[in-house]
Amino acid sequence: MAEINSQGYGEEPSGNRQPDRPDAPRVRFAPSPTGPLHIGGVRTALYNYLFARRYRGTFILRIEDTDRQRYVPGTEEYIVESLRWCGIDIDEGVPAGGPYAPYRQSERSGIYQSYAMKLLDSGHAYLAFDSPEELDGLRREKEQQGEVFQYDHTVRNSLKNSLSLPSGEVDKLISENVPRVVRFKMPAGREVAVDDIIRGDVRVDASTLDDKVLLKADGMPTYHLANVADDYLMKITHVIRGEEWLPSLPLHVLLYEALGWSEAMPRFAHLPLLLKPGGQGKLSKRDGDKLGFPVFPLEWKDPSTGEISPGYRESGYFPEAFLNLLALLGWNPGTDKEIFSLEELIREFSLERVHHSGARFDPEKARWFNHQYLVATDDPTLAAELKKIVVEKGYEAEGRKLERICSLVKERASFVSEIWEQASFFFERPGKYDEKLVKKAWKQSTPGLLEKIAGIIAAIEPFTAESLSLEIKSCLEKEEIGMGSAMIPLRLALVGEGRGPDLFTIMELLGRQETVDRIRIAIEKT
Ligand code: GLU
Image (cartoon, rainbow, N blue to C red; front, side):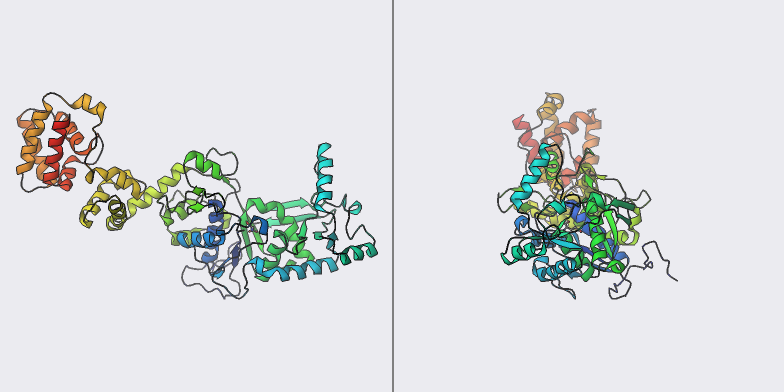
């Protein structure tokens, strides 16, 4: 019999999904299109996806776009494209559709209105007519006393709502079309207890909470009502989301109860925050700008300011490396293993191994992950990528040569663009020579010595790194010249500086004529 784990799902070997299994989990990623997806959001999507795949469930993308004021055009497409680039397949929702369509909340407002009415009828909610100006005034008043205004059970009876006003007055306000919102009547003296999969027992005294708005004056729901209604209607079994939503949890639980849905309430798992590299506070776009790393999966152009923010994709990250590094920001497999394919993540991921405390983002570690994937990528694949840069720079190179260059320098690179940086001298003659090194290594005897070596190179057969190494070394031995006094000037002549791979391999790849030309140019120039 299959082992039953603490989430109540039988361990399933990965393979074909069977989303119609009656006990298969249904999870959703529910971003609001109010800006580009932050990497923390991608991590939330990833954990949902891994969980769904591990237990052969369904991963849903729902767009929570009820806040029209904060809506930023283009972000829904950005979210979909980001998930696609990462390799997170959407089973149901936007844009794929599915049995609970529509999956865009702005297209479902009638549904939320009917639940708001239901809550009004059952007495779990009430109408509030206080104008934004009146509420602002109350807020300011409290502020002056050093306190914070909260619309809650201590003040609701003295404010303008259907609990405090006589029913005739309420009817009059409605008939006069006075703007009104629906507020949840937070029960006083109730402790709400939830067993969060990551955080364990979460308990909150409901008396400390405010009467949140459920339906706004424009008839649109707030996040809370829409989110709970849709999780119920879409048969979500597990809500896996960021820690910033933990304070909303008691309200959500009470909404399930008030709507008579307690039996169908999903399990909750609140993920730890992604922290700044310094460890203090939430990772922000500003941290990325300051330290030079992207906080968005794809490049993003702000439609109102035109400002461009870098993306992992455009910075040269492999999607597999990006997912791998995100997976380990907040989850650990319980071993030292750090490199995981998506298949391995699906097999090993569990919410029980997600940490409680925030996960510090380390930009160096992010590069390290990409380096590991780059080194493990085969040379023909890297060469095809390098070729794009080479062509863009206006050079030509045949595949075999590019492959050899990749294999020579990839250990020193974390991105294909860095392979180019390490290898550009194969295509471009040195524009200048490292002055310090010239001062140190270029002696009076150097031009003569290099001339002699150029002579060997011009005549050598076969023209391979191996025979170049043998011939040049034996010539130096014969003349009793130390290796260093020839090798450093030679490297300067060919590369322009003191770095780079094996010199004889460089010669072979440059070719006989180019090697000799570079040596002669260096003799003339220095
Ligand atoms: N729309 C919310 C967000 O933007 C969803 C929170 C949740 O997953 O419940 O993150």
